[in-house]
Image 1 (spheres, rainbow, N blue to C red):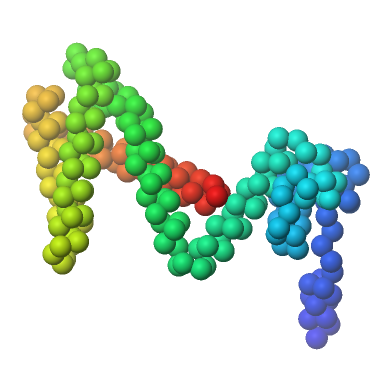
Image 2 (spheres, rainbow, N blue to C red):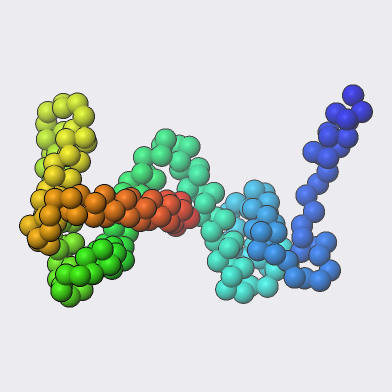
Length: 212
């Protein structure tokens, strides 16, 4: 019973802003964001500069940036609850294609490493990567169109299988290596691509949520 009363008192205790309690004024980023988040809850209509003035924080670049991200993330979270995440998913998909192209040079460098004995220039490897990406998006577009017209089960699996077959054949024909070596490098290449895709998806997911 006593423990419940102590817990209740803790919950009722008003929030203490770090800007008021930290006499050194060397407030960590995490504590600043906590202050901004708490202040935003009670004043959602204020712009970041006005809010910083009221809190007593300097209007530095980073303080303004952090408070704006608090505003954006809260607004996006409200939209997420309203439409079930439809707008967020659309925004996410629009950024994914951009992220894929940004990571293409990194992906090409890995291709150069696993085919280091082949006397291909970086640009030749890059042309190969662009060609395979073009086929990827072409197949994806075709299967999306088919999916709108005809209800086909496991359409994503069929699309992925066809692309992987194409990729293996493309590697075999372009780099002219034996089946075993091509299969090993095919597995390595796809594993690395999945890793990049995972990193890119995380970055894009966070940015899509923060950018209003």
